[in-house]
Amino acid sequence: MQANAKPLYEDSFAVEGGNFDNAGRVSSNIKSILKKMGLSSDVVRRAALVAYESEINIVSYSRGGLIHLRVGSDRVLIEAVDEGQGIADIELAMQKGYSTATEKIREMGFGAGMGLYNIKSFSDYFQITSEVGRGTCLKMIISISDAAGA
Image (cartoon, rainbow, N blue to C red; front, top):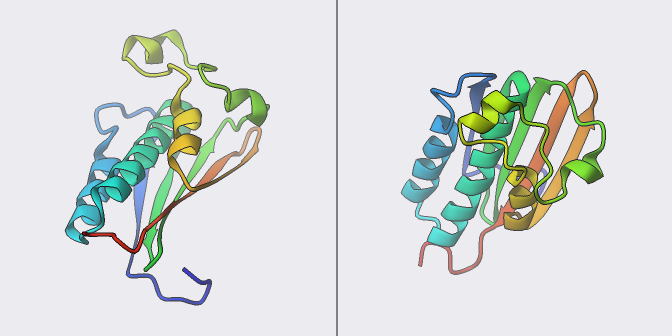
């Protein structure tokens, strides 16, 4: 999707920090939207996974944030922006199994240290920027193949 190209679909979704009762709703909405658009099951699955992991990170580690969805003819762009503690050592945070989750978060079944690792693994493009004390921004792109919807 070129910078000046009009997206086929665009929306933003609020995510409330600390609200585990609603965790997963945004990614479920994104999955439904992409399915209704007729995207391939692989694209839908990968986009839903990166959206879910991003959403859980916002719920677990921030005061809240937004997940932006933009669908173009050749890609799905998901951006997750939070107002949180930020990440001091991004390289360490990207390591499989590394987590700063509290015991409470772990008791709920989250915080296994696979979130950022999975996001990077399932994205065709992944960028993370963070500022300690301000928050984190994740940018993920899932490419849509020519066979999308087939």
